[in-house]
Image 1 (cartoon, rainbow, N blue to C red):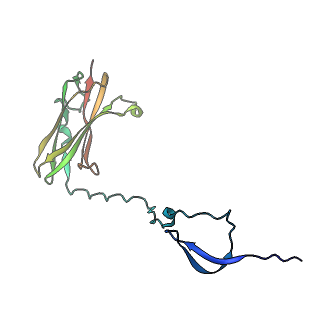
Image 2 (image 1 turned 120 degrees about the vertical axis):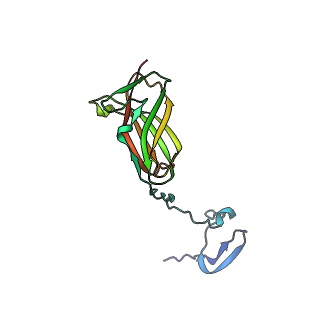
Image 3 (image 1 turned 90 degrees about the vertical axis):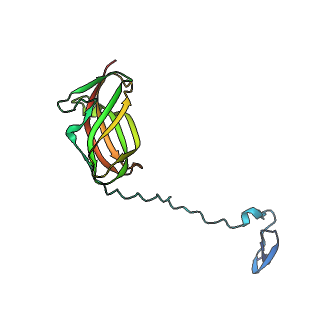
Length: 189
């Protein structure tokens, strides 16, 4: 039986400055071909990485304001949607949407006016085609008033369109009121 002699030596740690410090104890010698130099930039311990998902800011509470619409006052260019009448316009013509409303407290809200394709009997084809936003519309407290928005009719092609109107908080976080039956527009070439 042949005995081989193993080489043992003291263990040293290489500091970031490249100074070898004895750690004490014995360890096997590493052949020089396998030894690796420690990069001082990598020797420093990096700060822990925060892997938590970003925290979304909390949604502000819904304002304690009640909005009421007078559904029968809704009109587009003075044409009521009741009876399915439509105002006839051309691209670029002014369109005025009106709706009597009231709020229980002074507030400022965002008004959203949208045009939808209105093909009766084909509800799957109904989709939003155009939108206008007024981000700072004042509502007086306990005072009925006419909410009014005017826009130039966009050129979205001849056809019949339904006008929707929504009232939101200015940050779009809360829907305060919605009317998807404000009126109809017949766009002609």
